[in-house]
Length: 388
Image 1 (tube, rainbow, N blue to C red):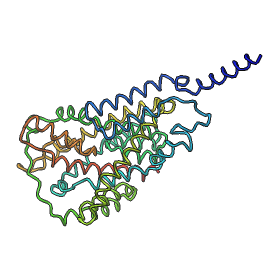
Image 2: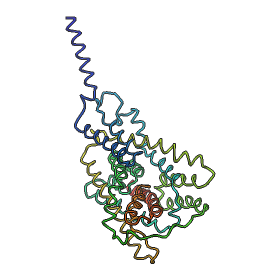
Image 3: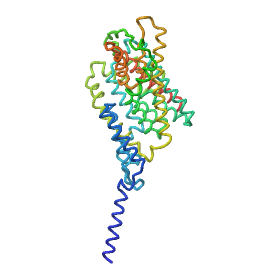
Image 4: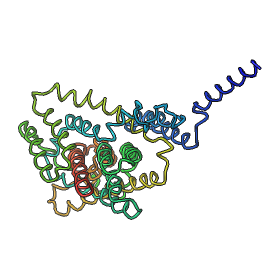
């Protein structure tokens, strides 16, 4: 009897141990999502597509899809109140990480190209059409106005802005919206060139633009102050993002806060990127993430991003109708109106060099690119003000 009792005890303990392992709780959804995480890591390492984003996100997807027994008080899942990952995810849920990312972006960004040719800000505005087209499409597919607004911002190709807006309007969709936004940011070199080639002629692709003028230091210092006043007086709801963007830029351009600017664009932004990428990836837990709504969000995100690219290129061609000869815009920079900085500008440069090895478009494209950052933040503010 003693042996039988010991056998039963050991069997029970062994059964409980097995029940806690991932093998006992794994589903097909977990396997699928782990493969997605491995795919992201592979893209980052082999193709060099946004490795600073895709490696944390890809590894986060793997972490989030290690199966465990839910509802038994283990406190390890990202959606379990009080768990370590849940605490780190707080910065995503409450929209804390995106403004810190914008602070770093501001401290990295040189607005000289935009100040040199201010009319290129219109390309950044035109590319935001993808956001509002996606908003209308989301409503037609049955999403609520708040959910549609959060989904639509994917078209701006701005991951931090997408996370910030979804945290305010549709927190239940933060995971798929963030993954979609960052995925399309990483795939800029794949998605944009076919659209650019389709919409332009060979003659247009070799248009040479006037070199940017030299921008004096004083003008660079004044710009972030004027920028914050102008943009946030028009749309105060964009203050958390644009306030930090212009503050970071003032740190960079003032010439007396180099230590702060250096911290903002290096250590701080790196730390926030790690936490942001890892927790956004971990939020793709299969039991929560794999839904019909997530698939529709990915489809809408792709469509809005392509529409944004289309709008930017077409508007550059329209601007040429009103430009004097010698002051034409190469429409290949129209793709840079989305705010995937600096990848969209690099795509403009790369495609342009395919047709003229001596025609460098990078600085012109950066003007549209940084305009896109400002434009997507203003668009987010507009959606937030109307939908809150």
